Amino acid sequence: MKKVIPDNIRFRDHTVLCNHCQTYRPDTDYSEKALNKGFWFCRACLKLLRLSRRSNVTYLINSIYNHQKREGTVYTRLGLSSWLQSSEEFMGLFRAWILSDYDPDKKPSIIRKDATKPYDYHNLIIGTSKGNNALGSKVIGFYNGIETPYISAAEGARVYGLTRKGVLLACRSGKLYGGVRWRFG
Ligand SMILES: [Zn+2]
Image 1 (cartoon, rainbow, N blue to C red):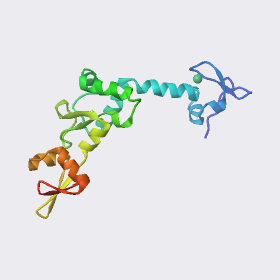
Image 2: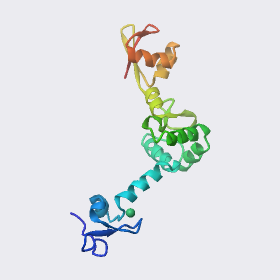
Image 3: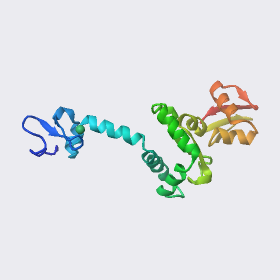
Image 4: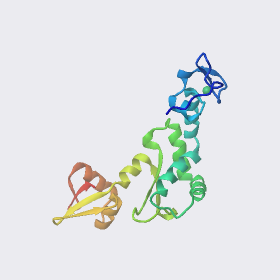
């Protein structure tokens, strides 16, 4: 059921006072969700707020940690945060992502070297979303009539003494590489 918006918030002329810009705006300038939540921020203010969160590294690290937490971390949220904020690699990628106007492919991303082990500092690969997606893909090698899954292209490459890039290219092209037929898992 919809919450009744108090009279002091939604006025007779259907204006609502935005608690952020302190302006009376027509109630159509608010999302119903915001009004029902009792969160009197107009759409324009909410948009600005979202944009300012995006440029906040703590906000990004929090969302990274929330994702990792589900699969197990050996560090705390605060531990990861200070570790990443002192990482030149991570902060460099973060700045590049902002400069790219938040290109989703360039968003900083963290995956594990070994996905069977928990998130730990020595088990992290810092990269961009696009790079890590390619790197983190599971691959399957078909050799001597046997299909073997690998947790990553890097792992498959290591087993056969090949390069990760070569394995990824072979997954895409479908050509044999190192005598092995590769595909994404
Ligand atoms: Zn506002």
